[in-house]
Length: 307
Ligand code: GLU
Image (cartoon, rainbow, N blue to C red; front, side):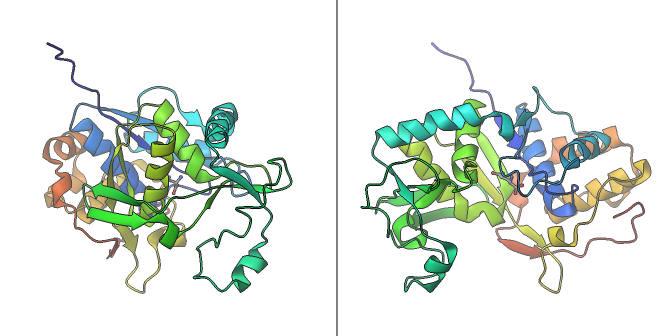
């Protein structure tokens, strides 16, 4: 009898486009606690595939902030900018399946097109162009429905043809697109569970579709609500920097637990970091997180540091 239990592997995958803010902290905390509460591993991947958006120094800054907040990660940190060969490999698998075509549609042409915004109308699908630059490469979608069984948001069915159409996997500027990079990395790192913000929910059916085409298994997904200001702006947009003075760290983590509906006792906000993490791991329950895509949160701005 095979008694080996498959190892839980979660991950946090920040883009180095600025400092760690409350919006990304809740993704880090929830993915970390879900992994640790199941004796699993938790990996970090820096998603610097889009070099045009990167803010130099922010990857190191995010890692040092996570470290100062007491997160402990497994394995070495992966950088997407060093994974190009892996992406090329899977691009060629998709090409060999006849799913990829070159597209020269400009943004302005797509804006003027009569179809619903954000859905690629397939103009270049049958043009049979060579797959060499300067064109973007798109992956054809099918009319099949993609099913998502989200641990927080519930069951969802999405038809990609009606929701996004054929999507870009390699950009005109030759950077690989996020969708292919993330699917290739999650697979090669053996990720079994993905907990992240609900702003990424529209990407999930695309990623599941790519996993199916590449014959990868699909991880379990859970999308936490996006933290919003009362006036309707994402908390991340206000670029609050969480590189805190040490004594503020636990208070900030306590706020993250409040946001995630874990009802931490008030005095946990004034405990030591190790007491905090011990309580949080022991009491973590993903089922308590509210099934909302966005949630207004009045972050306690009386906290010190640069928060
Ligand atoms: N890099 C993405 C971000 O920072 C997260 C991608 C993911 O978790 O799949 O928003």
